[in-house]
Image (cartoon, rainbow, N blue to C red; front, side, top):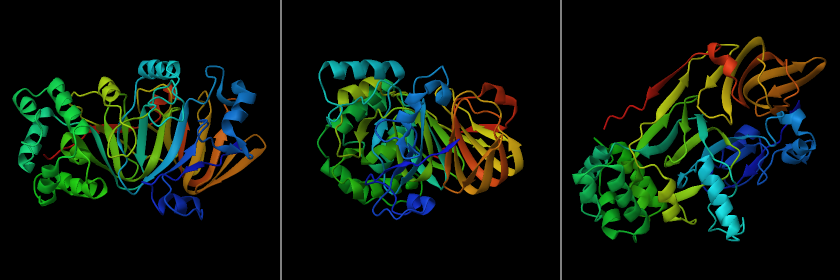
Length: 398
């Protein structure tokens, strides 16, 4: 067992207080993410050494014989402003895209590059505060109603086709027009006068916020196109390949496959490859599910996904419990309280904001204390009878 020191990311959309307070750091300016993992872009440190380099010295000991690198990356994410609208590729799309851009000689540092590696990037986010996000396209008929309600149904030439024949095909045409056409002056004028109340009031509220940040970006209407969700602390949402999404505000624990592949669609000054985005983006209506584990002391509460690269668990420790045997490495982060991790004669204390990596070869860990802990690992199929959870569809009053 070893302590991990996170790599901090000072992106401009980050919070000026959440990560600073949690980690008790004096870093000035916005802190958006704290990375716990071995991604070469920003690896965590173990005894002052980069985790990816430590793992490479003995991969079998650290992560097991089934993998040659740590397959997941865990982050604390804290958003004070909206992130870019984005989509992540599937594994096959990432492999082909990465190889294609390498073949074209596009440097990894080139801002026009889409693929930083050859891996997919499915994600799960567990909220630590009230967390607001956009996720997946709404029912197509609902988009039509929203545009008409807000009086923007005459702004875009491809809207009538969606209204007449709602489908993924007609939505793709409209969406391409929205993100690739020049800023629509009438759009900002109409939206700025809409009251943020009544039906579509929350969506209008967020459009007002986005207009203040990106007054020249047609993507400020994204709350009308995409499902607006709110997570309460410890609720989570899972994001599959091809699902368009954007985090708006809040802090949480994010876990993903070990990748940094992002194709952006709007609300960003960064490069947007419209053709590649539309090729991998899913335009069918998508109803996100919110995951809410039922609390139970001294059990691993899993946030279930269908992803083989990672699993996220929450432990509400009261006294003592033994971690089940799960192949692969485990990363534990203390959220509240204090616990001791014991294996044989060895022990490490895990307080709030402490993070520990447990190698694959170290099993039989006992936790002792009173603490709230999250754990990232590979999925443990044998645990299916050891936790309770329920999922419910997004409830959309509109």
